[in-house]
Length: 272
Image 1 (cartoon, rainbow, N blue to C red):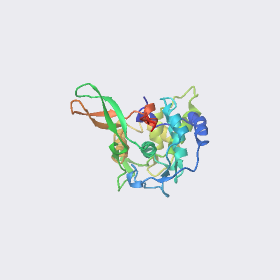
Image 2 (image 1 turned 90 degrees about the vertical axis):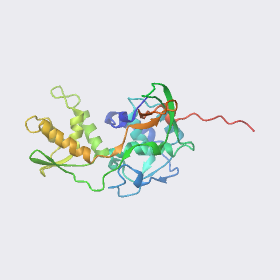
Image 3 (image 1 turned 30 degrees about the vertical axis):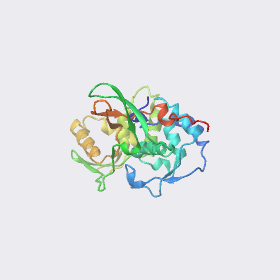
Image 4 (image 1 turned 180 degrees about the horizontal axis):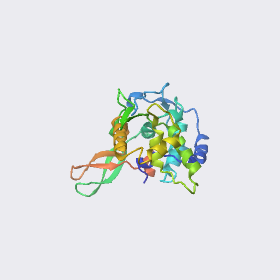
């Protein structure tokens, strides 16, 4: 199974081949407005209306073969093909997962899904229906202060977009063969969320170097920055709350992207 947490990143070297395969299948189709007020971002910052179209048969086939290795690149390619209105690079990373669920919800007449999980109360294997409305979504706060006090400095941060992740991917790809320095991708991603430090705008590498310097950036500083970013965060939870059909207890289950999520079994129709 592929979980939501596996889909956050898309490696640049995986994107090129997968994107080419999927975009070739793009057609006008039926484009449906995606309600901005239902997005984790509430559509704030999007200059145009986001629209999406139901997944096509070729796209469903590709998604049904998704695995942990190709998942990030494949889902990005599908979203580029099936979501329009706003340049893909400007879409918030926190909106990407919701959009993927939205596409699946608007592709099938029977849009719910039987989620199989192990109950934490009675430890039995059971099933529960899962739909778009069951997602736990924290939306972008209405009043956001992007300036965070960190020690004696002020860090100005931003919400990361697909373009920011692309920058990280390109940086990591460029430096992955560096025999002298090993770059930590988590810290590179944190650096990409920083706009300025005390009003000074630095390149990605310099911000990274600052963050990993134990003298300039202490554990207390990291705690303050992390707390500040968490306070304004938004997005889709990778888990869903489900009720056990056997004992009635509630459990938190990871949302899996199994092949049958995108290609569900259909009830056979009888000839009349």
